[in-house]
Amino acid sequence: MSSDCFYVRVKSVSGPNVTFDVLTGMAGGYDDFAMSRSFALTILNDALRSATDYVPGDYDDPAHEKEVARLYAKADTAPITLALADQGDWYVSDNWMRDNVGKYIASVTLVERRNNIGEEALQVRQKAIEDELGGTLYTDKYATWQPKRWAQCHNYTLDVVVTDPKWASHLEVGLEYGTTAYDVWDDKSPARVVEAPKPAKKKPAAKKKAKPAKKKPAAKQAAAKKKAKPAKKKPAKKAAKKKPAKKTKKRG
Image (cartoon, rainbow, N blue to C red; front, side):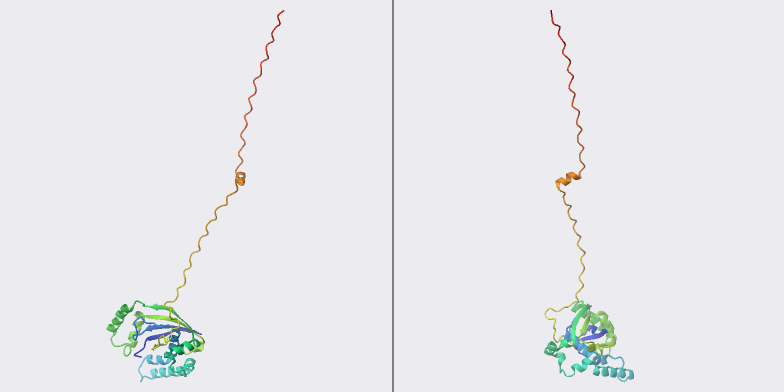
């Protein structure tokens, strides 16, 4: 409990699809995060047993003891527990993860990071929580600290797809627990995705350029125009009538 790197909350479970909210602990950096398939497999396996540390109440409380016993019993019979029981220290072996993680985890997607404001700013927030509430996160003040840490400290959401729904059948929505899981084998390295891809904005369709009007052939253009009225011919001037010549009398 004192060395928990992250705190995990089961947000939703639907068949092979699981959504986890993950709060960065204090064992690493204040903005530390893990998102590999090896990390996802470990938090799947940790869920019920680790959750027994976070059951409200004291160990001498019958209700507390009953809930702890229920979680242990469910963990012991979970398909993921039975499948990994004889695999040795698989949760810290990069070779095992490289060869076997794909049998259980199909994909992991980082959906969102919240309060991702940088190490120094997060450290200031953490100190303010300590000063306000007192105690220590890992013992007497855990239940008091965590709501403020979820609201103010670095946390993120992962979508995990398992290869068979049975590997997630033991999970319960709302279950919260600590984990020492980390990226034992990061299969996304070196091109690790650190933010969920945002949907590309659709570009407005380019306006089609108006096609230039086709020029009509000169002959057609002439035909299209109204025919000019032919100029009226002025009537030709009539020739002046010739006066008949006067006849001269012959002298006798």
